[in-house]
Amino acid sequence: MKENIVRALSGIIYIILLLGATHYSPISFSILFGLFLLIAITEFCRLVCLKQTLPILLGGLGYLLFGYIVNNNPVNNILLTIGALVVSVVLMYELFSVKSKEKDTLAKYVTLIGYIIIPFLLIIKLPFLQDDYNPNIIIGMFILMWTNDTFAYLVGKNFGKHKLYEKISPKKTVEGFIGGLVFTILCGYVISTFYNFLPVVHWVIMAAVLVIFGSTGDLVESKFKRTAGVKDSGNIMPGHGGILDRLDSIIFAIPFLFLYLQIINYVS
Image 1 (cartoon, helix red, strand yellow):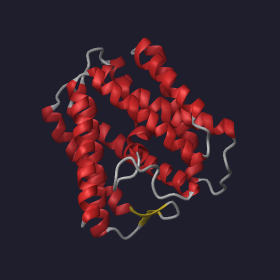
Image 2 (image 1 turned 45 degrees about the vertical axis):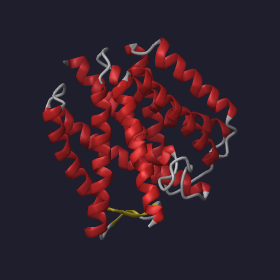
Image 3 (image 1 turned 90 degrees about the vertical axis):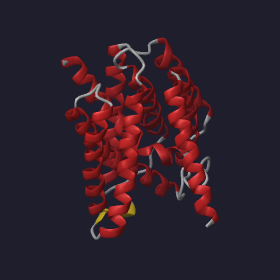
Image 4 (image 1 turned 45 degrees about the horizontal axis):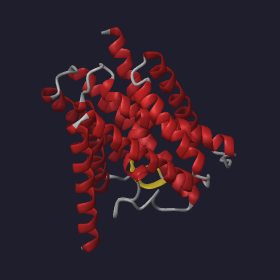
């Protein structure tokens, strides 16, 4: 009972902090996700046994350079997105590969940059894609992901019979994935009636992108934790684990979502 209360309070504080900082101002939003970035770097370094000093310096430099100095340069946005997508494709290949080999130091740094640092930079850039700060695109994205998490759990718990990828995540089911996808798409339709700066079709596609690649990202992080022999990436959020545990789906899906939004901005 006590653990459930702690978990609930921790989750509420996290949601209030995220929504509050995102709505309050672009500065508070950027600072919050800058802090999340640094915490995620330390958690990832612990998972892959990488010394933290240089990764933190790389994250801080990337944050200052691409988060502020060249905040919305189209060429840099494309290059960052491509870099993250390449690493994401490699991680998906490794996730489903029969053979598994330990990463060397260079591979760990490449993964750190493409899997952790760049996705956080893309999250920070996302509400500025149309120049003016739009916090609702971030809030909508998180509502979609939370909807998926909730209904994937409920449907999977009550109707799940077929394992999604038992070797990596024994509790996830095909039924849970489909349930999460259906309800998240419905949620995208509902969100479009409130946040009509994007047509309904784009919210629905965003929902599908977040579910498909977010679910994959959850499996990728589970594999990192399984390899490291730990249950959670960290303990900053009692009952929920670390920042990577909370944002693993978002950071894996964001390069695909960012690419899609760049395309529709270009053609519109």
